[in-house]
Image (cartoon, rainbow, N blue to C red):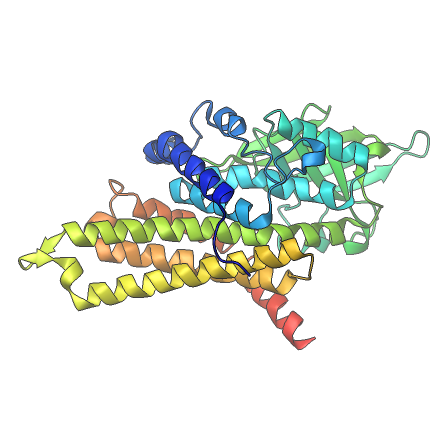
Length: 379
């Protein structure tokens, strides 16, 4: 494994850093307060090519390798984890189509992203989080014309209120369970498909999170992704692919918090000297730096394995779980280093701490990740 970024990757990294420094970081606090992204931000991200990074070149996208995508998401995470989450959700929602879709589905779906559209991955429901087999949204096939009628409610869906296309999971079996889980492409303007309440979240507030309501939503059979009952396998493969990217955003949060703590420790004076000269502060900074570096390497290793085409399910769970835990630990320590100022909203680390918490929850809680890791090792 080569740990160095090539010239093309370094140029792209610098471009993303400049974009983050100009369009995201200066407005992160305002977006957090208003619970919305800045107007026009995603259009600017689309111009940068950030909305279709996983779309293969043959379908008009960037076709970037996994390490490059992780590098981009880390840089976005440094600026604002909420914006990073919204942009990364495009990759999450595209994966099922790339995994199991037809050529026609892939082209149609990818064209939307290539034109600057946002996508949403709709699996979670009020009664179905970690237990995907509990999905209650029903998809009933109409014998006359082969269409499907979907009814149900989805919860905590990233980009729900702003997405142009949705990847919705519903159950085709009346008895439910994972054997009936099936994936469908649902355009936003489909009759009966509505956006419900918007969540007022603790963190990643600029990321639009809403419920979805499906009332007699009719979808043509051509919008079904994969076979009936194949949805669980597709969802699990999708989450495996996305987890290192969640880890990358987590690393971005942690790195940004570390940078803030280091700068503050050099400037803040107590007892006549910068607090950076105190061994306790030095020990905290050193521990934070080691954790961030270890998390980044786990993410990069997993991305490398993904690009090699080998099984990376265990490593994906490890990278996501560890990086998310580290984001929580490092942001908490950054607040501690900065004391009362760290607890104030005048400084960004309290926002980073709130943002970090969701990394341990979404796309598979860290408790679920530990179960995945243990099962891979034991069985």
